[in-house]
Length: 342
Image (cartoon, rainbow, N blue to C red; front, side, top):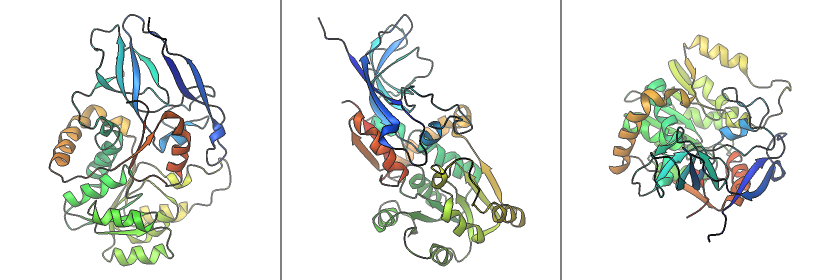
């Protein structure tokens, strides 16, 4: 008789005040569930850690989805293996893309699962071939529309989204200027990812250095950070610049309801005076009509060596809270995933 499976999972124990703390998460252990008719039991192989999860920890959520309830399993995308099936569409051993969250086992009726087929690196389905890569693809190509010779600026340039944005800009013949935290990340952006230049936002006088790196101004700014980076970018935006907005990680841990100190007046004046296209987008809206083209194009570019993907792999589920906090602090290098099981 086989021993029963044990499911370990992280629950949201408290709503963070500012930067999340380890005590905001609770590790819970219980027997793994058994699938009913039409269901499958999934074992998590890889868990994706992403900045949007910080918004999900607030009671109101990030605005496009409800927040995680206290005592509920933390949400997250996963690459999972079917380990028991009572659903004819899925076989034991099959790898699928799922939303199982921060846990080792989960049930599904199959409606939220995407079969992955044969993949030499299944974790890429959570990164360059998944949501972060898709965010870069839609945001830059559909909204930013870079043209040959134009200047594209992206912050968090070695992160899961920013690293792909810069490489796509180069594929389209534009100049790619990255902004990252630290000299090592900036060297990586230039020497490995092929950016034309990368600026360390921790070094003094970012505004002057960015102006020097963009003598012809900025045509596309891929916004995923906000803060002092946005302050440095605004005066350099050209007429009819485009600003795809997928996030603003510099503000995720601010106290809610306090006095606003950001430069909204300057932002609106710039958008108006320079006829800037400023468009927020939620990548969930684009899967139906753009994901197939993204997977086709990105797979080809990866196979041809035109897109380089870097993963930051953390071992074991119990490391997820510290790794997630490090992500919000900029400690990760590339797409952050947790290897939950072999």
